[in-house]
Image 1: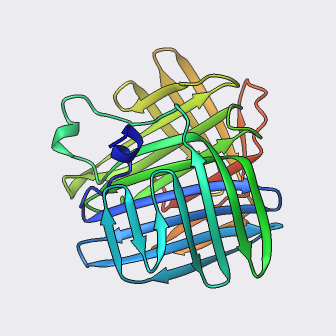
Image 2 (image 1 turned 90 degrees about the vertical axis):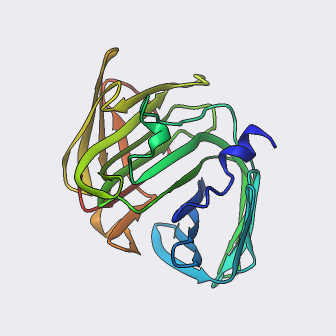
Length: 282
């Protein structure tokens, strides 16, 4: 088994999520594969925007998971590809995950799994293939994207998510999560998260894990906020916004847009694809 396959293998946790995100021309696209083994249910959830118009599609069905291959209602997510359909949307995608890898850890605690969710993300993925929406084909050629697997006992009560990429997979990129997680499923809660940044050409990037190697805080609304990461090497401030009407309602009080804006203060980094998501506010 490759390292990538190991990262994306099913954990048999109460919740197992996989997603791929990309932007290609007039299309912004995110496919979620969701297993809820606690209730023996599964769904594929598509969140997309075509020329700025967003919508969400759901497809449930029988499921099976074999290592890093997950099939839900005939749609497939594997370590290096995904294909499937939901309503009038179909996709056939292949990718090179690259070497940039985010795996936030809490030393001495990770093996005890205290937080609601754990995560591995590849923020500099090169994606090819095509997505079809209502009969219109959107070619995907060497698009910059994100590939993520997260799992755990439950969804956190609140979170923010930021994923910003430049026009190419080697360009500047930012990824951040700030969440309010219960400890071993019980209150009181802990606010935890991470901020990963990489300038153009930086293969590894820099990772701040809060509250381990620094502190990550946020101020503002779900659609307009300032994310501040303070660590031993300095402070990073990320200004994020989107029009409220540009958010899709994913259900479960989760709101998401792939049409956001993001500025890393003090840097002239060109972000061409920005995803923002929130559930309540941590």
